[in-house]
Amino acid sequence: MKKTTVLLIEDNEQNRYLATFLLEAHNYTVISACDGAQGIDLAERILPHLILLDIQRPTMDGYTVARKMRNNPRLKHIPIVAVTSYAMSGDKERALASGCNGYIEKPIVPETFVTEIEAYLKDPRREGAP
Image 1 (cartoon, helix red, strand yellow):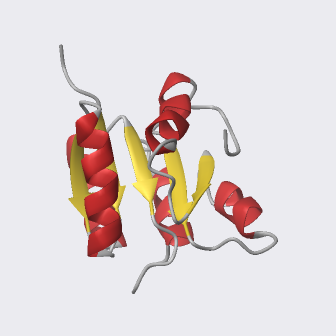
Image 2 (cartoon, rainbow, N blue to C red; image 1 turned 120 degrees about the vertical axis):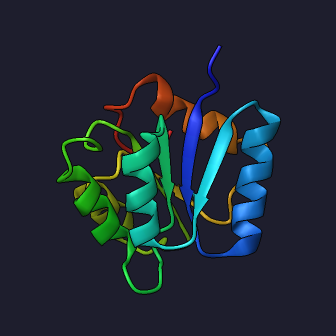
């Protein structure tokens, strides 16, 4: 049986480590990208089951990355979940408007993180946080 592949687009090494550790402990394959352009390139090549996208990114912010993915016919069906420290009024709505299917605030909660993202694998049309 093929493992579920998650593309993690995150520039912070500690955040990348924690998310990867949690997902791999639940039998997911995690591919990481440190910036938006690399993330888009990897997504086109590996066609992951889910994309976890940090919004606060150097060079290309996560909103731009999500819009580019939604405009790409090969990627537009893949669920994208924003994982971000942006928690001000309107940030969740902005992430969803840019093409993200969901929104998880940082710091992530290790006990619930995998369950939260699994909701988007079961129903990729789902919008909003679980």
